[in-house]
Image (cartoon, rainbow, N blue to C red):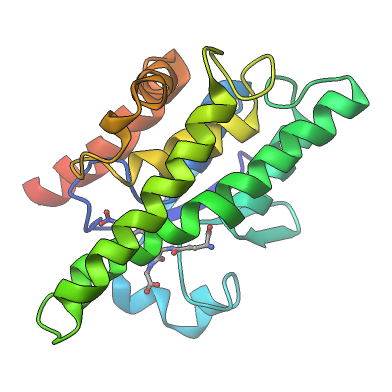
Length: 216
Ligand code: GTB
């Protein structure tokens, strides 16, 4: 039996690979672990069967044997700890790669998500015009800091790791905003991640779900 993850039956991103199952699919592909996918509707996500997997009624989740996990970062850390390919063997390099996983999720993703949520939910609010430049600025500052650290390197700390995997998927949430393009080394970093064969396979798999949902 392969591990099973959950993903949107109909992703609001229309197959652009921005929902968080994409990062888990990519992790599986990087380590060569086959996986199954259970698609869930928005209604099913909030029902008790799914809430027993995910207390907040979201995707993705992970199930293998008697282990059930939620939180994309925890799922990817679990995969990376069990299979070679996403974390270095050297103890210090491994700790630093895990620090980059946390940085992607705790330091870089929050201002990006806050900006996205404002775009989706606050456009008609009286404060929108005033608030948006502030949210854009927070994203710009964070990206500037990340860009400075990355410099001319291919990856954040030596070889490609789960930290890069998460960071690339987090930065991809800015697609279409023009933010990443202002930092050519970050744009090249995202392109480098997206060009990896494992990323391509994961992307194709989630896109197939969207295409099938349109066909049926
Ligand atoms: N911290 C959790 C994790 O990392 O796993 C967050 C999980 C999460 O936010 N899941 C989202 C979800 O289930 C899907 S990924 N939302 C439904 C709900 O909360 O009811 C977030 C997402 C959704 C859509 C797009 N998009 O359309 O571009 C991008 C990202």
